[in-house]
Image (cartoon, one colour):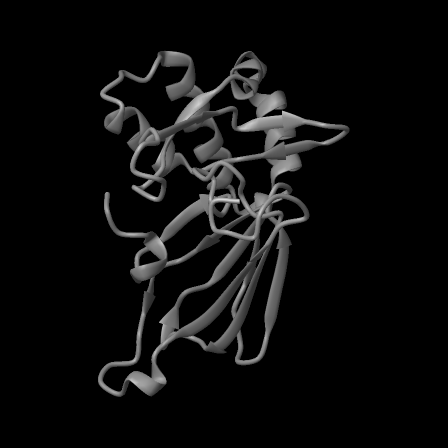
Length: 190
């Protein structure tokens, strides 16, 4: 807790950007200025396909996904606001969308000092298992100048761990991220 994963070279499991924010961005753009020396692969998954796989393998858990669970807000909120956000991972508005970060969900329960119920634990574990299946993702290696745009509610993304260039900072991995909303305020909290 306390350090955004994007500020590290550690593996970032599949997630929705700003899943712990009241109003996550609708679209996420990543532009590669310089790739890492090794690793840092971008992986994409379709949340609709993940939901369908859960429906196929663990239909007993799908209803839990439409009920609120906790997200650690990572202290990115006003001082007088709660440290956790309660939102359902799945939503349906003509199509399935998802708000997901297993790490922030698990941390949310710790921050709130609440035990995670068995159905939530099983659902998060089942989704994690689905996401580990190579058939459920597309792997991409960024090259300088490439730009990746995703619909944040429909496509989950992950970054594998990486080794950066030692020494000269001008050789280190550099990606520029842009978040775009169709509605709401332009501030980070939306």
